[in-house]
Length: 237
Image (spheres, rainbow, N blue to C red):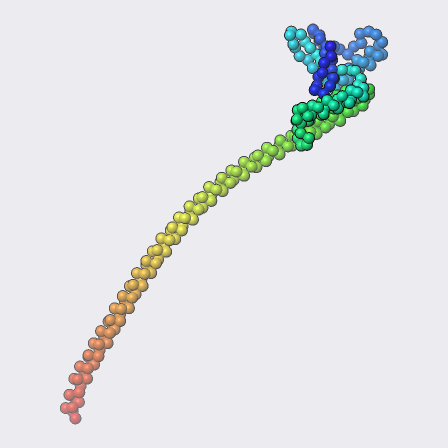
């Protein structure tokens, strides 16, 4: 019984067993051909490990298919890829998990097809695929780290803004208090200056009146003195 393990095309066959999975050991027939087949199955299982699950009390294992692909299969795989990209509405550009998943499945199928014809080339492609996956994982880690760093910086900036707003509010209150204190001091100074001006004006007026009074008194005394001196002069003459 055959089935599909991915969305893009046939990659495996179903094997129904009751205990352990099938081992890589020839059971009969041509020994060399069987050994090559078993060796190829081991390589394919190492590249894409079999799936194992339990259903209806039976243990099911899904192995990678060892059937070589034809040119028609490759064209069909491309058609399946284009159709799945359109059906699942994968993005044409930018980061798209759907597109990445479908292309990863397509790459696994191509590695399977190449491994059947040339195991060494398939293993080399597997090495390249793993390196690409490791590079993508590194980029994802760096991206997540940069996002976390950006969030921390943004949070720190928000906290700094809150602190600065509070500090500005406190400084504004201090400024208002100082302005009120300055206004009170100016009012007191102006009142004191006004009182000083009024007091000076009163003092000047009083001094003027006193000076006028003393001047008049001096004039009167001078007249009296002259009147007293004049008869005395006449008697002497």
